[in-house]
Amino acid sequence: MTDVLSAPLVVEFPFTRSLGPVQSAFLTGLRERTVLGVRTDDGTVLVPPVEYDPVTANELRELVEVAATGTVTTWAWNPSPRRSQPLETPFAWVLVRLDGAATALLHALDVPGPDAVHTGMRVRIRWAATRTGAITDIACFEPYEGEAGPAEPAPHDGGFTDLVTGIAAPARLDYVHTPGRAQSAYLKALEGHRTVGERCPACHKVYVPPRGACPTCGIATAEEVEVGPRGTVTTFCIVNIKAAHTANLGIEVPYVYAHIALDGADLALHGRIAGIPYDEVRMGLRVEPVWVEGARHPDHYRPTGEPDADYDTYQELV
Image (cartoon, rainbow, N blue to C red):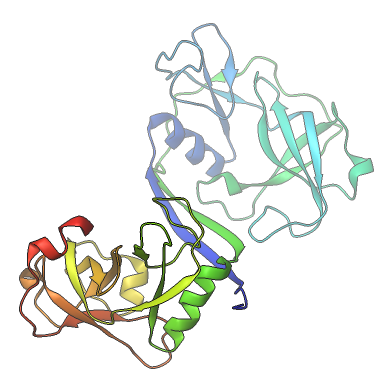
């Protein structure tokens, strides 16, 4: 039996969004050490502010300033901080209802241990030394024994110079991927510049990449079948937007990404088409893989020079 592979994988990308007037004022306020909330039609003050009433869905625009002090409403201890979390040492995640607000703000509380935090304790904001207009302008909360802030928040017009109008929030997922028996065999075959699938014992279709079971019949598959290396373009798209991963590989737009039915396969896989002007790629184009040194999969597919395949030979795979 083929040894099952396992490898750490990271999915990471920057999520960029524009800000409406409420969020823009809130984040710009943090940069200026000012915490803003929004008042709903019934007088409730929401912090963090939202643009629409969660109960009535009415648009909200009445901004108010709340205090930088508040009360812990609930908490959880974090003994092992992860990358990019607010503090590098163990801390408590807390929900803090700031003085003047009716809702709680989630952030970190810097205390020496879980015995030092409790529901109802008084805390205040510790501002970051460098502030840019982001939630990280609040470095964390810290214990506070001084006087409470005003119970009634002060009106605020949201007027700041150089408003923050957009943010880029990095999204990252770290996990260990185990592809299973069938895909482990597929990946190991690719290292030898071979492409293999598995045949269903009932419908006899060959699926590439193999799944370990037929998606049509639901029957386990085990018979390994080598396919390709040549194949036929069934459908394709022209990519005109440059992405970070393609730019790092030196791939310039426009380029073509296609579904390719390898000879002997009953399922099309996808790959990049090169070696031909993008506007000459077409359905039925016969292609072959191009490998580069050290790669574990084909870098791209190029035309073979053969006549185009008849539509009838691949119509079921479109």
